Length: 112
Length: 115
Image 1 (tube, rainbow over the protein chains, first blue to last red):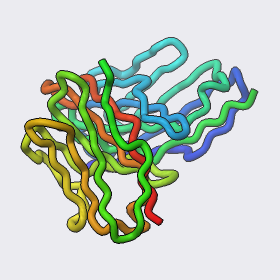
Image 2: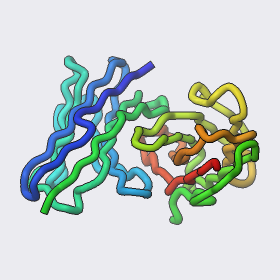
Image 3: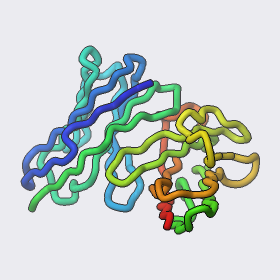
């Protein structure tokens, strides 16, 4: 089955700096890659996603890049704010398969 | 639209008791998924169900765990004879018939504590 690895496990940045979280996957059949933000004690919430026919996607301060050849994808957050502090999870799945494989999470701390 | 509803939010059980976790999918969603999140870890897939059918239970422990999604009513995840290692957050997600990536939405989770 699919194996998703995520790095780093913790990331501390100063407010206004950029944050980058990286994930790798093993199954070349995976073609949908969502990113979730989970605040303490709350549900994971989708913040951005990318499909394998696209190399990059942006939504305001958040962007995701995908390298299919290398089987890795990254989350980029620019101009970080304290409210960006949370745990971020990457995931991979085949578009029609309905089972998501999650990374182990990155705890992002944005210091004011 | 009330979203994916899970209850209870918190559940405390003594070792050996049964835990029943309920999940009502979003309106119009016919696919339900259960995930377990151990402290400081990512979500791990447990089971995928449609009405009256278990589609994929490859992530379910072989013993003590069962899931159902009846024709009427919520999906139920049942854990019999709970042990301390079952303490975790259990999240349910639902999606419409098109497939998981289209509108995959998580509930707020049930935090199970076994004492």
